View (cartoon, rainbow, N blue to C red):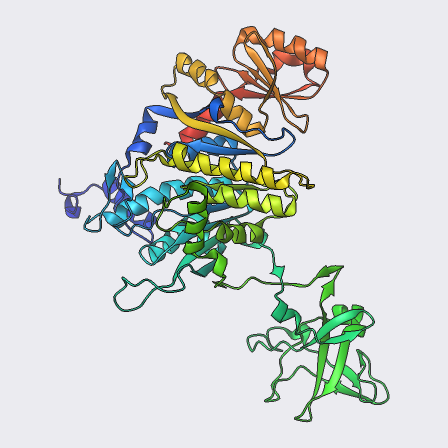
Amino acid sequence: MAKKDYPNWSKEELVRELKKVEKRKKYGLVWEDKLEQVALLCKEKLPVLVEDKSKEIVTDKEKPNHILIEGDNYHALSVLNYTHKGKIDVIYIDPPYNTGNEGFVYNDNIVDREDPYRHSKWLSFLEKRLKLAHNLLKNSGVIFISIDDNELFQLKLLCDSIFGEENFVANLIVQLNPRGRTLDKYFAKTHEYILVYAKKFGSAGIHEVTKSEEMILEYDKQDAKGKYRELELRNRNPVFNRKNRPNLFYPLYMNVKTSKVSLTQGNDFVAVYPRNSKSEDGCWTWGKEKVEQNINELIGKKVSTGAYRVYRKDRLIKNGELATTKEKALWLDKNINNENGKEILNKLFGRPLFDFPKSPDLIKKCINLSTTKKGGSVILDFFAGSGTTGHAVLEINNEDSGNRKFILCTDNQDNNGSGLKIAIDICYPRVKKVIQNLEKESKGKLVKNMPGNLKYFKTDFVDAGSSDRNKRKMVDKSTEMLCLKEDCFDGVKEGHKFKIFNNSQDKLLGIIYDDDGIEPFKNEAKKMKKQFIVYVFSLDESAREDEFEDVKDLVELKPIPAVILNVYKRIFK
């Protein structure tokens, strides 16, 4: 039966079709989804991690453990959806721009400019990864995505559908080539973009920045409390006025002799209302309660037009710290351009490896806007490439004695025919070189939490079938995932069918691989008399609580592999 032969359709068929039509988006991005082999593989095989101990870097076990994962980022993100769901503070990515000239690979084939499905392949590729990345962000988390004109508008619509249009923060314009590209036909392009989205807009962890020297010069007045500048208390935005902010329209009273401001009328006082130059009613920026609390910070003045105005003292030092301001959406800093990125990479390796590598200073700018030195923020880059994000995190920690941690994900493809593999020949050596250089620089200095340690993992697979045998294989392969999830990597004890790990914060992790390991583990837990997080093998979703009754005060039980498999079911459905 032809699909559009509606007159001959049954009532049930018509109802089903109508429901499909109702679900279709009325507005948004539409493309032909192109199946991807790395995603199809997960119907048969499930990704896990295997640590390559030969690439581990240890500088100080009291310092953060950074993570580098070698493998396709779709598989790496799938693992992280179990280990780091809701744990990531900041994501920065520099995905393929889909120019047709950069070697963007889809299903083992380079996508060139003449490919009729070029945009569909790129959108299919990125959508899968951004959906997984969305799950990883904390509610206060933020994602920064570098992009150029080729896919900017498609990416904006794609991110609106994944992160929500209401969580769009900004489209930053970033000057990365001040001289302009000479190959451009009509305009020499100097800039790219960074799209910024929040997990939840109202909770976004984006900070203000320290004011520039030029801005500090505006604070040209001083009293006993320190330097300040005068800002008009009237809200100068015409959108806000007496009609839509009636609680912010009220009279203030100015003493014409002393310029003092009051909420009450007195001798030598004149009433001042928040009116504009056309005598239209506007509103104040402060309510009465705030005015009353800060009345001594207000000054009245008679301006050249003869009208009276009220100003507030905007202090340079607030709560003991230098005043801050919102970051501008136009970035022109010289140190963030690609030439700087290329010079840094060339200095590390002695030769050019990438045509347009991002500068660490660009990524540091993003990280500084969305993290603080305290709290152990986690920064993820799942298009890690040469490892610029790892480089940036290490440098920031060195500068402010912070304890941020990075997770880098990159494949190990050949780098543009150079014969060098991206993960093992470029990304890993770069991170290692930066750590070694920072170690040398920090000798004789008091540097905390630097340069940090590195754990190197590779993606691997187990069979996806739901048999008991496959479940046991998943448990046997789960050690690295569980250590990563709990940030416990230091082996304390290995017994019959169980292992115990801890970290520098004295957190204890127990993994029980088989029924036979339960009693030996419990005996060890009784000896240690400390609190454990325990992952115990189970063929179902129970954590075998009845078998741990005698140590229930010491253990927090979690079943494996059921929870891991449930995560994968949601992803690979």
